[in-house]
Structures are given as structure tokens and as C-alpha cells.
Image (cartoon, rainbow, N blue to C red; front, side, top):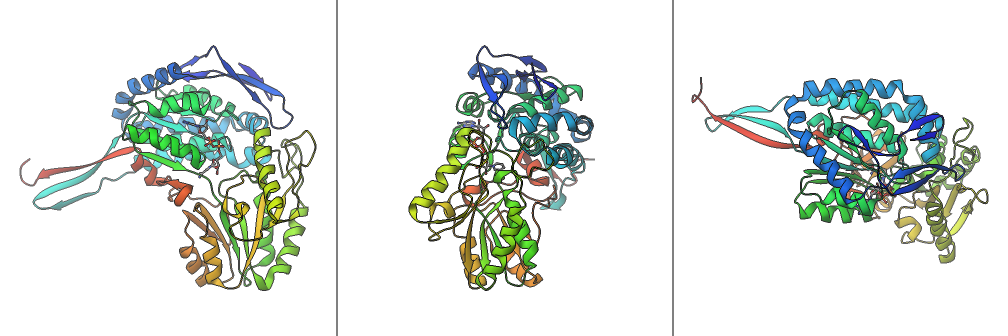
Length: 482
Ligand code: NAD
């Protein structure tokens, strides 16, 4: 147990309804000041075996409950999350350094919404029923089995609930492995699952290093679904493990998303949104990090962009005035700084930022780069930090070509005053989600995912419930039964 931001947090795994400690631990430090928050149990192959075993044993009775009965547990869990928002936000703020105000007001509550939304959706499922070829047919959802959920270090609580909620609602049992750089808020989720009365083994949390316990979890042949959010490099490894066992696998991966601004747009709104891409230090997969602006409004846009970027306040994430928090880890700071150094060396122009903000801390200044060409590394690869590139285009065709010129395809943002153009460009941009004149507005029933190296499969709404189910066609010969 560790006392973190005044909250008692278990540093152990949660397996079969009990806390389970490992003899070996790993250090979890706060990005705010490098202080040691906890020594966390470092799971191994035996931990993975115990957790999958518990999930496999618990599966038949959880699956047999049916969506309406499972929904009762999930709604209880949602209520408990709402009742504990302040505690979870306090812990995640020092563990991941996301802004405390966004955690309290928005991000943690989304965890509760995730469970409620999937409780409702799973219970509302109507089997497709029709007659053909002299048979009465139905499409039946069968819970798939134990599912492994692997999540990244950014927004760990929200992203974990987003993936665990559909799995549990669909009747899968779950083993969740949060990332080793921000493991603590998911430990609180295990406490709440227990308080909500989820039967032992239905929801398990295993802590540890990806290449160790994570790899053991995704290789276990008893696992029937693997749901992953993280980097394309890890997805390739997990995909190979899932393929060996012929297990369906979804991957929500990185982005290098275009933010396209047409001359007919509300330029100030577009520039404000562009400067807002530095929020959370750019550690957001959906961020529009490639600014593509119509050449005729280049100077006017840049003037407004600099004005809005100047309003950012770097500081402690617990301070309500702060808008830019430190990066998650010294290794990640080196990763972000390395991108900018290589860009500089290659001849890209660093127009603002491009420096560590406070020596010894993990803040990186909001950075804008004019790349020398569209092939530049800084344009083509995800940085996952407060680094944006700026390019201009002459017309709609060039805007779309530039938008679609990377291997990624997670999201796109378009600013235009024309509804027709919003529709045309929105359809032409190859990405899982495109927002026009807005950003991050989410309907949890909509499909969510990436194209290319941004992901495989779709989450959200019924898409996630179908993924966590085996769909069966049941055919009964007409007139053969009474
Ligand atoms: P990562 O791929 O390094 O790690 C993600 C998780 O995978 C961690 O829990 C890690 O321990 C685990 N892992 C690592 N190797 C493993 C292995 N061999 N087997 C099993 N598990 C393993 O990613 P990260 O650095 O934690 O996260 C940042 C990335 O996540 C960025 O690319 C970001 O864009 C992406 N992301 C995507 C979304 C989305 O919804 N598309 C959301 C958030 C983050």
C-alpha cells in the first residue's frame, strides 16, 4: 500500500478478488518532481497465469448472467467512480501529471460514462431476426471468453475503462494491464470493482512491465480477445502473439493528425484550437499536430496562433492556472527533444519553443516547426509531445493530399465556413474520425479507431460489443417446432 496524494493505493495486483503481491517491484515516480510514489508489484509469467486462470474460471457464470444482470454491476461501478472522482483525479494527477482540473471535471467522469453507456447498450441489444429459405434466423451474441486489455500511460483510467466496459458488458471476463509509467489509478479501479460486488475473477488487474507480464498475458491460449491501446511497434508484437493463438485483436494506436484550416474559416477559432493541441503537453493520440493552412491566410493565422499559444502556462498540474503539464518520464522527454534536435539538424526551422522549459524538470516548451519538406521526419512520425508542424496549401486538393500523406489515419480536424466543404473534405481525409469546426466531441455509440498504422478494428458502441462477442447465426426450420 502507498499513500499517494492523500489516497491509499494498493501497489499489488488484483487477481480473483484478492490482492496479490510480487516479490519483485518496480519504481513509479511522479513526473511533477521525480519523487518516488510507490514500489509496485512487478508481475511475471506466474502472475499472468494466475490472472488468466481466474478469468477463465469466472467466465462461464459471468457469461451466463446475461446483459441486463451484468448491467446492474456495471452501473454500480459507474456510481462508485462518480463518488470517487476526487480521489482518482488526485492520484492520476501526480502519477501521470495530467491537469488536475481536466481530470476532476471531465476525464475521470468519462470512466463512469463508459460503464453506463455499455451497460445500456449491451442490455438494449436486439437480435436481428428474419425469415429466409424456409428457416427462422437470428443473430445471437455469445460472450467471447477471457479478454486481455493492455493500456498506455496517457489517460490511463479513462482509456482502461473505455476498453474494459464493453468487454465486461458483453460477458467477457477481463485481465487489465496498465502501463508501468502510470499504474496507480487502475489499482483504484480494482478497489471499486470489488466494492461494486463484481464476482472474483471477473475483473483482474496485473501490474508490471510490458515485455514481461504483458507479453505473457497476450500469449496465453486461454485468452479469447486482446484489446490494445498504445504504439504501433508494440501492436506488431502483440498482434503476432494473438495471431499464434488465432485470437481477434484490436489496436488503437498513434496519430499524426492533420488540422486543416481553410481561408473561409473562423480563423481565430481555428488558431485557438490549434494552440489547444499543446494541452496535456501534446500527449494525446488524437491531437492535430500537423497544421495545414491555406496559403492566403498564412500570416493572419500565425499571428492568432502565436497569440493563443502565448496564453499557455507551464507549471504544476495541480495548479488550476497551469495549461501545460510536464511530460510523463525522462525517457519520453529525451524522445521528444530528440525529434526536435534531428529536425533542427536536418534544416527544418524551429519557429518557437524547441527547448526544455525548466532545467531538471520534464516540461518541454510548446514548439512550432516549419518543415523543409513534407517528407521530413517531424511531419511523418508521431512525436507525442508539444510539437506541431506548420505547412501551407494552395487549394482543397493539395490540402487533402497533404492530410493523407502519412502512414497514420487516426483523426482529422477541418476548419471551414462551408458546410459543403466540411462534408467533402471530411469524407476525403483518411482517418477513423474527422471533426469539422470542433474537436474531441465524442458520442460513445460511434465507431472509433484508426486507419493504417493508427489501428486495427473499431471500438465504440456496438462495434466494441460485437468485437467482444462471437456472433452466431441460429436457424430453425419453419414449421418444425410448436
Ligand atoms: P506502448 O506501446 O509503449 O505501451 C502500451 C502498453 O503496452 C503498456 O501497458 C506496455 O506495458 C504494454 N506493452 C509493451 N510491450 C508489450 C508486449 N510485448 N506485450 C504486451 N504488452 C506490452 O505505448 P505507450 O508509450 O504507453 O503509449 C503511447 C502510444 O499510445 C502513442 O503512440 C499514442 O498515440 C498511443 N495511444 C493511442 C490511443 C488511441 O486511442 N488510438 C490512445 C492513447 C494512446
